[in-house]
Each structure stands twice: as C-alpha cells, then as structure tokens.
Length: 450
Image (cartoon, rainbow, N blue to C red; front, side):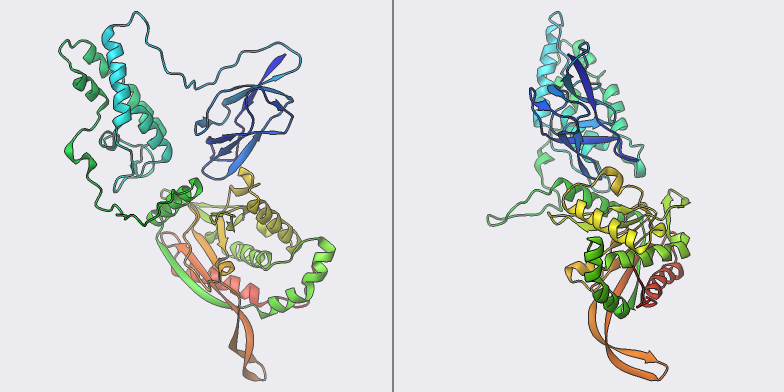
C-alpha cells in the first residue's frame, strides 16, 4: 500500500486559496481516478477537486468551511503497491495541549480564554472600514472583539486588514497572558481582559443603520455568491468614477439576416445562432479600434492590455450572475464566436465553469435585454474601466433615410448603455467607443455567409 497526497490544485491567476464547501467522499470510500472528492469555492467560482489516482480515502485533513492554500495537502488516498508514507497537513487544526506540568494558572487562563471566545461580540464591517470574510472568521475564532479589530493597522488596499496583518497581530498578542502568570492577585475577570473582550452596557445597542423587523417579516440569509457580488459591487462604486453614455442602434439588418439563416445553421453546426456572438464580434472590433478602452488601472498606473478578452455576464439558476471570459475575442470568426459563447453559457448554467474560464477579462458585456430592460447603468467589473449593457431589441416606428427621401418605417432598434471609469476614460473616448459598436452593427452585410 502507498499513500497519495491529494493537494489543492492551482485554479488560475490571482487565486491563492479556496474554501471547502462539501466533501463528496467519506473516509473508507473507494475513489476512481478523475472522480470528484470534494467541492471548493473561491471568490471567483465553485469547482470540484478530482482524484488523480484509484484508491481509498483514508484521511481528510480539513473540514467543511476551512480555508486551504493552493498546494496544500487536503486528503490522503491509499493506493495499491509501494510503501506507506505518513503525511500531515501543512496547517494543523489541532489545538495545542496544556502540558501536565504546566502551572495551574495556565489552565485557568485557557478556560477563561475559551469562555471569552464564546461571549465575544460578532465582527462586522464598521462604517468606513471593510473586513473580508476570511479576516472576520479569524477574528471570531481567536476571540478578537470588534473594538480590538478596529485598532489593527491594515497594509492592504485602502488600509484594509489582511490575513497577514491579523496573524502578525495575533503573534504579538500571545505574549500578553505571560504577565497574568506572574500576578498572584489577578482575578478571572482580569485574565479575560487579556483577550480584550469588550464588556460595556453599550455593547448591545443596535447600530443606527440597523433594520427593524416585526413578526411578519422574513429574514433570508444571503448566499455565499450573493455576499461576494455585494462586496464587489460596493468596492467598484467606491473605486471608479462611474459615468454613462447611451446610444440607439438600428439592428434591422441583423434581425432579418439571423431569421433567414438560423434554421440552416442549427442543422449544419448543431448550435443555436443567438444575437450575443454577433454583438460580441462588433464589440471586439471596437476594442481593437479604441485600445484605451482595453485597459486596467492599478494605483496611479494604467495597464494597456495586449489581449482582448471580453467577459459576458451569464445568469445562474439561482438568479446570480457570473462572467465567463472569451479569450482573444478579436481573433475569432463568427462561427468560432458562436461556439465559444454557447459553450461558456451552457457550462455556466450547469455550474461547470473552471476557474480559468472567468479569469483575465479586459472588458465586460451584460445583456440586460434578456430581462426586458431597454437600457441599464451597469457597474464596472474591476480592475477594468468599461462595461456595455445591451438593451432589449424592440420593433418601433422610426424615420428611415434613403437617397429617395425620408419615410417612417418599422425598424428593430436597441439601446447600448456604456458605463466607464471617468478617472481614466473621458466622455469623448467613452462616447466614440459605443458609437463604433453601433456603426459595426448597423453596417451588417445582409448577404454574409457563416
């Protein structure tokens, strides 16, 4: 017998850790190669971790809701042949045991600390300062009160407290109980103060922005994805100076062309021909014409992206949105764009996207017309500087200009809503870009072959 170490795989650029959401296998279960062992969640996407070998699961090194670093061993699978190798997790979750020879005071302090952890007030994001879920969990686990957490100096963006900040604080904080050991008159209350448990009559006073409920209200817990989306949306609004430009495009030629070729296209390619890949093609061309829309901002530096990777917001079954990315969109022909759009949309609906599928976007498109909206003001997907909302296609009366004169006719038209970061994109560039998209759509060749 031999033991195989199942490690948390790399899940794309900028993804360093994941949270275990569920174990699909129990200790003692037989596992086949490529069979999923557990489910994980990152701040980008949910995914499964498959086994690389056949064997039997003999040990789980982490529990549900534990945060695991990329490369850490998360489980041991026993395989046939070879020698057994003892493997331990890099971050053991065992609590250090108090030695039998330790002074009686140490045991008393340990009991007091545990009691204090149970009564410590919940950690929330205070006004003007944001705390990530990871930092909140560490604070709760270590018995850090809200008042104490607010005093920690953060080294992250906008002085936020990072995981390294709170861990460094905990290291310096562990020396505090030693003073209690030398005190013969210290009471249990004084020892509890070593963990800075806040005890004051005002601790239970509700915040001024607390929502009051009555007996008939229903309280619904936000989903993990909902919490992440909420966090990202607030951060984006606080980061970018959002402005919008709107323009209306006549897509009658596209409507009639698609109606003419879609049935034959399905028979030939086995794929549905929707409007989305047509719009994506026009947007990729416009990004190539206006490369300063294909940028990102990092501090006071502008990063001009070489690749044109267009993200498209896709609706999930639970109502949330995810943004898979069409890599090198400007290099795809229309057939390739159709296949790529359909593949990403289908896998998004089935929850089968990989972490790499949602990485590296340089510009984003969202189709608000799917829900009947004629226009919208979407929030920028950081660190990008623009996002385009596609409104519903409507059949409306419109003035049609011809060499023989103007007339009123029935046309298919839609609004394009362009949100952009006014810190780095001025109104001229933002307006010219969305007009370029309109021009590409209106110049569609009704005799185009695909």
